[in-house]
Length: 524
Image (cartoon, rainbow, N blue to C red; front, side, top):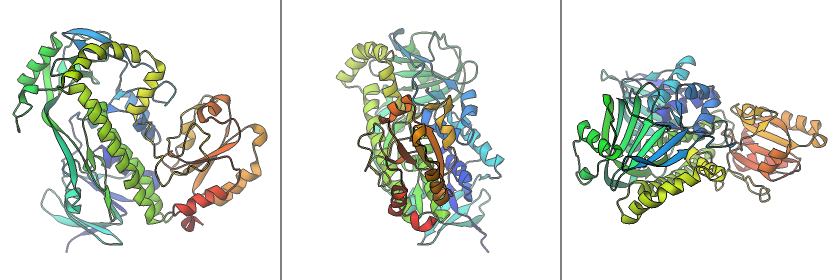
């Protein structure tokens, strides 16, 4: 008789997205089964950069500092033309006061996976390795996955929900019959993880630019450990070119025009860049996340980080529904929010990628004649650096157009419903330290004379099991961030995006909101 395992959530795939989802479900006490056809965690560096928003998510489970300690903070960069530095880029204090992690962190995929996997093991969970999805079926009450292990033995897993985090070739997506439409760049790219004695100057990374090619040279943790990323235009139009590392090394040397002295090649790969997304990201009780849902150009290092944010967005919604605190309809907002984000991401990374690698004459002219001076200028201006930081770090992602965001009273505020909760310090303490619990958060911003303890107790008695509460002094720097100097309150979702901002010291707007999004009838 076929063995059947019963759980709450099935997670297909144990890369950064699947492992991140598992970590989040542990926060909420939700049971799951996670499996992957790989033998174990990847030992390849693959995705390279961890952004501020990902570190903020990691920080809630005590993992951010471990990542920072074992990564490499990007401080300076250098554009190069004809073997000489044409522009120096200053990324120190890149994010200013916008995040507790105001920098780019080189912390490759293999290390992210190890960090997340160890968290699972420390909390009594594990991955079923060398196990793949054979088939799945679902009805209005459950989803059933048939899985096969390395010995060919099949078994069944039943759950209320399933999430496919199984990469660009996603078997989950194929089982669900969801399209994955988009395009493929004709250009050929390569990535290599090498040990190299490179004559580095006062910079963290280097970007030599040529007429029709480029290379990005990025340091990784460890002595003489570097990542090379570039393109091979001479093989652009070949369908399946077999490129050797010797060819890659030759192309890199032509661009850098200085000794590379590569001692060891840990890993390299050549590839064509695809930009595609599924639509929708969910069907019935099954969801897609990470590369299974969307793939795009490597511009900005967004891929791994976006998958982790997919998991972060979905986890709290699954948890509330599974805990009978929300109606199933809440889960529709995952597709609503993350599909819209994916479409914006694909558009922006495509545009940036064209500027960086297009062979059109006007892009070549820009890279050779305008970019060096512009880069020197913008990375010296704090306002511009902070603007760029919001884009790259993903802290600027918002859900203002989501049905979960209520804008009735935020027209006079600088911050809007749907935005990520702004970062600031309160008497030297990081505000996010008060927002680490897996709950909604109600923040009361007021001056001492406005502090009504009876009102606070009333709120706590009625909603304390679902929301935590914080009264925050309305200091001038906080009032400046929000654009309001008088009493107001902010309700945050469990992922710390703003639900609404209100100046009303009553329960009515909270009650109305929960009724509207299908929470009220479950929690009272």
